[in-house]
Length: 179
Image (cartoon, rainbow, N blue to C red; front, side):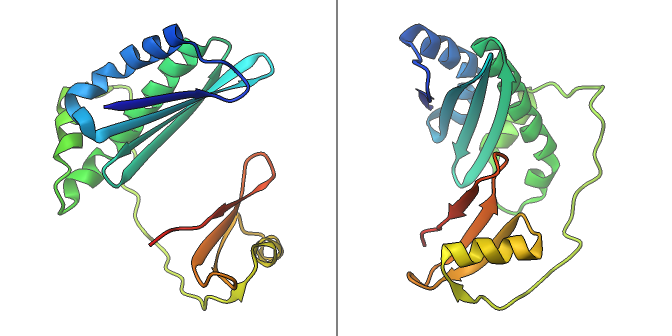
């Protein structure tokens, strides 16, 4: 299991890294060397935001929490990540491909009795559209005119399919996949 810890606007010391790694060690027996954790600590006024991303083969799990104490935020983030994995349990088990690394982890994770059972989510609408070549700025403008939170488009310069999206902070993001 590989753990990368970074601070954005804050120094993450060696002792803090060790404490975070020890909290994540419970995942090691299930995911072994396959699990790659990226932890980012960002100060936000009096709160600390902790972003935790787990990359496991071709699946990515991400959780985020804020608290006054970094380690408390880490604990809350880990709880959210475990909850995401539990929610995906039935969907993963229904997949044809073998996700034994997650199944093994889920065997040892106790299920919360209080956790409300969510109905299974499914695709209820399909949409197809023509990809129009445009610049990222034109794509943002088109997205805003449509009132959407994201837009898939064909980059006029590179010829690649890209996605622009509106971020929580009000700015925009650009996803440029490689294939």
